Image (tube, rainbow, N blue to C red):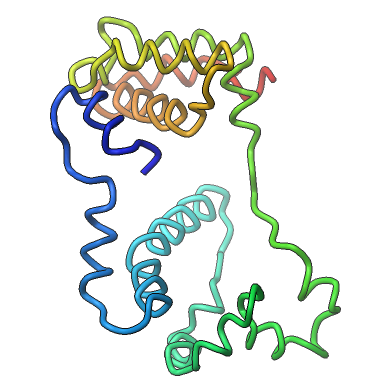
Amino acid sequence: GAFSQRELEAALGTPGGGAYENFLRYWNRRDGTALARMLYTDQKTYLVELLMKQDQMSMATSIESRVPLLDHHLLALSWRLPERLKIRGAEQKYALKRAAEGLLPERIIYRKKMGFPTPLRAWLRAPEAGGYLERLLEREAFIAEYLDQGYIRTLAEEHRCGRIDATDRLWRLLNLELWGRIFFRGEFEEFEAQTEGPGQAA
């Protein structure tokens, strides 16, 4: 999803499938309003990815994690709620916030949404990241068999000098490369021995 259709074709060196085909499959399966279709599609795609990551991260740190707002009774109720109780103007989760009044301080209920961002842009522009990005361009790179390295080199160079912000694209390519080297080639020991990554050095 970080790559446009044109970029995907440039990276693959051939016409590729649409980045949103999986999303559209669920979107087209559901009738109703745009909001109902978006919520259904998110549940079948994005939420599945989030739950997988939540499960893996919690297990990796021996945490018994729960997702109480995904209780099947509560989820069924949410589907029966009229849309005016889900989003009212620019305010999302309207009914949930009103239900929480008196249980939680208003500063908690109505505070601005907070994510868990990491400074990927700064990491990938730091000098320490150079060695990692160079891995994408090696002749024996895992992705070299599948992707056009000329495209990747241009992407990395334009990002480094600040002409474009390719953070999302480079981060995904880097993760794909490391994943391939570790799980397809068995190079785990090489990466385990490295104590500093781009983020740690920054």
